[in-house]
Image 1 (spheres, one colour):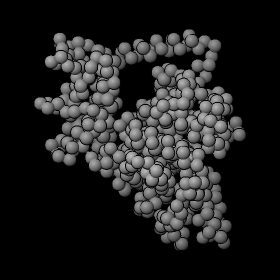
Image 2 (cartoon, one colour):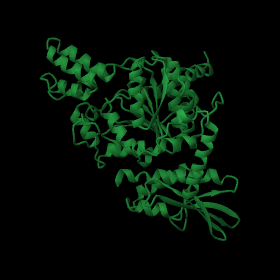
Image 3 (cartoon, one colour):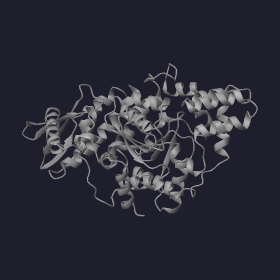
Image 4 (cartoon, one colour):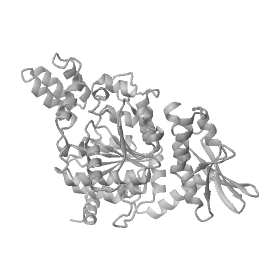
Length: 481
């Protein structure tokens, strides 16, 4: 069955699916995939819950009290407490990481076991690698396995152009923006990589240490310490990108609590593709959780891998196979920021009238936030909001010189970065120039201004490149400030 037919089935499956997929496609250039266990289990791996249960049954067959503790912890979504129980036993004696490392080392993913799921990962990897996402070629995961790497390696075997990539876990995330890997695809493993057992985040204490959490993981809202490197990086990803949950259930656990906390200051809408439970109560619980995470849900049938692949192909491929009607993304952004349920109002009888009123409000907001003014015969200033800037407003200048046009930040970005870095350091400057080059920008020869040449026909395109370069560099402040 072709993917157009599958999309029609997905749209019919839930009334909100068509709108939410349209929203996701409109946001795809700033969307980062977050790969959960549900995307890799079909290649021969167990979920973390099932792995802990299997370890417990194998090593403690005659200790029902230990098995009950672990079972109850898993049922209440407190998997780290179950791991704590295993880790404190005489058998492991604090070395549960070694057992998990051994489990994954003995197994390699069977990439032929689920060709549809492989195709989905391949499309995601191709898009993120070739297009980048707002300048960051990143794939995020909470998995310990190496499925993503194996898929990339398999792709490299059959493609003429190799995909260069690096893997980052809690032990080496500080190297994420090193100059030599700025153009590479980056796989971020927030909870560690089995190839480095010391990076594995398994116990409650290791989870708390990874994110700088002081209180119990049972707390309703987890408070975080911004001084911790991994948490700064996660905050950057959640705050400056749309996140697409793939293979995650969104059920309450420490990571979901952490994400929920960070999403309150996020600039963008997040998304999740989830199997729809049969129970209405479960559906309501997940929707409530999603709303608290600023996340829109796209519902699919359980185990329908081809549905996920159809959605991935539509939103991640550069040239879509079908032109589908999409909801107005400006209305969607305004609605999500102001607590409105656009999925309900957009279907109302007064849809046209409601949209016109909302667009007028958005237009009014944009006119207040974005301004264009001539400040000299050959110079105009464009002011607009910029995240992580003192005062929240940034200025870019359109300058005419010798019959040519160029856009410039007049050195403001350099001044902001100089508050953090010693910019005279050669490695920092080289990294800076590499980022600018990636976006077609440069540093002015006689000043600290970042510039890009333009024409009156492509000013909107070149301005977006300059803003993306500036935004990317300024977001590095999150790591250091």
